[in-house]
Image 1: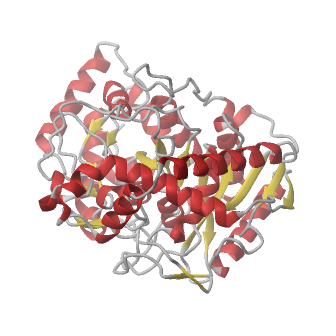
Image 2: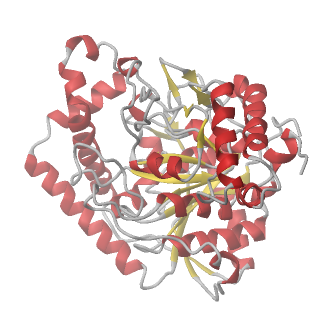
Length: 481
């Protein structure tokens, strides 16, 4: 197959992987095509940083072609370019976490997800950009600068996996990894019209890290332009690892995406939680239109608001998050020279966490448990819950964060990301899926939330939803084809 760069990058990851495996296209051709795409499009959006030199990458691709010629296929990532998010370590690459403090932080080993990607034949072409310490929902930092939206470079890419979302949307990567604590996969997916999946906690081992037990919020997950591609990467990343004691075995059966009969599914529409959650009216309107696709595939739809004290849920989230952020970054704060290099919001979060008591954390955990039980009972009535993936439209990239949402003042730098909390606090699988464009032409995302461990069921519904709405066929007008 003699394919040009545009022709290769137009294809889905599953398609390219199949062509490589059947030796209809070489790893060198694929890597060259994506490098060409990066070199011509990345300067406008700054999604991929720390670009590896082409000569080294082509040698890796040639070596992978030689393996294929000997009959050795490593798996679906064999020969596919990847750019690990700049937040977890990669052997031989600098991991800055978006902070100048870590500008010379050369990795001695791979995080588990990158270990799996590398052993599966991925070619690491660089890193994807993230905010400082992956805090906040706007991808900008003092090391690599600002990542810009794939649909309008004047707007925010979201975060913290903003670089990954833009790289996928602009077809500079076939698929990408990200992480998600407070919507870090889901918000940028919504902002850039791609799919981002936060799996059930533990099914993709996150780490290894110095804390293997308390940290139960941040997870690694896949991003892609369609569900088959997303499922493919999920299958590579998922699975128990003894180094992560809370990890579990939960791998998808990709062949079941098409063959599964969904039947009549009961969908609970959470919306804005009867006004508890501030949401831009355009977001709600666009999501409302997207819900029709669920009806088209045979789902029943009912609006529901769980009975809960939402102010206590927000307070519990603040305490648990601040406690975790402080624990992970307190050493930076206590070093006066390094503290000067931290952004103001990071210092605020660390200081807040340092002031919390053990009893306050215990009380927050009780609220979290009550929320989990509330949703567990709700899943007796509904198969899935649906709500907006992001509360706002992509905003001016020069703003740090929205100060008002739906007429309500945001009291913290991350309150506008509150839509991420329901799934995160309960440890549930949540898929951010495109919902279409607003009346002003900006991407909007919807969030499909499943019961604990029902990750692949979420992807099956997401696939049927995408086929009904044909969202994965809509491209950014910034693409040259």
